[in-house]
Length: 404
Ligand code: BGC
Image (cartoon, rainbow, N blue to C red; front, top):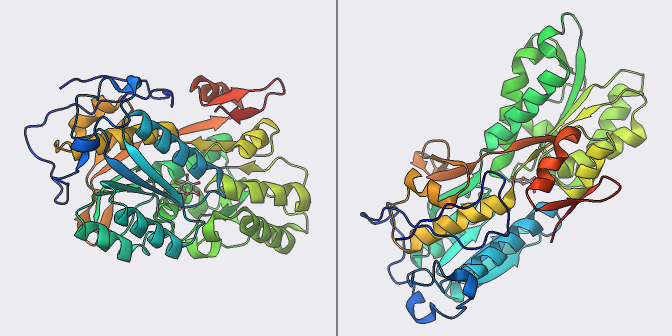
């Protein structure tokens, strides 16, 4: 079988021809891999020229993939949905793409409709990792493999998980704070910090939070970093559905309750960009001090990259979701052609990632084999790295826009 190495760590969405070729001496280790994708009759349906490497691979070409995304109201999922849809189609698959308006009931319905529509495999980014049981159980009954995309689903119908290393995202935020404030050499100086975390229904949110808190804990314990509001526990700082306006409102309350007397705020640890946007707005309009507050984020959303250029947000942890899509498609091809799923597939993805069989569980003791990509820190000083991916362009004003 042909093997092709594509791209580099920061490779682009323009790469459309992927070959998941690899050792295939054993069948896939997961139990619900389809034996009857039915794709043979449709294999040449899309028959596009770009797909010459896969054209001979009748077991995957033409299969129908259901792509269920959580919402269009947060920038990244529009990018994920578009990349997945585009790249699957370019590789000769049929696709059904839905967005479920951050409504779990709607996501269950959307997935049920895809199953009724005879999809061969599901790629699902869950709104609520614990609320998809009805749809997941039906997928298992229909023998349709499920890939949990970016966010884990807590149901054993899930065969594989593709995401970034979520704990490392938080760790990078924590390390950034330590370096920027030079906490190791702070002596008796005390820095004041507040925390905003993500949606408790999203399985990722706890990993981001924990990665950052574990990293910062020695300084919090030593009193070098002080959370003035004393709002530290995840459930006190979580943000329903990652909403910017929810983060904004809580930040305004914290600022008026604890900082209106002139107390200096040094850092606001935010788990992602949608929450950082709200926090930055509150700091800009409601913070009495004149120092620059260090604000973290995650994703590289356009509005946040603008804030980074303007010095309103300090960093974001960038996750190249085009690469996440490339890994997903490589995995889908391997699943549908019955290949062994393990780290030997990684070279065929052409994307740096780890095969992890320990970190994630779909139920107590039931480990979910995962492919975890590598996140990167982006600041004002290395915005060019984003432009170099081919996924962003920089205007004359220095602001970045997502390239189409
Ligand atoms: C994703 C983040 C994103 C957040 C809100 C998480 O599950 O991993 O990249 O910022 O959801 O959309």
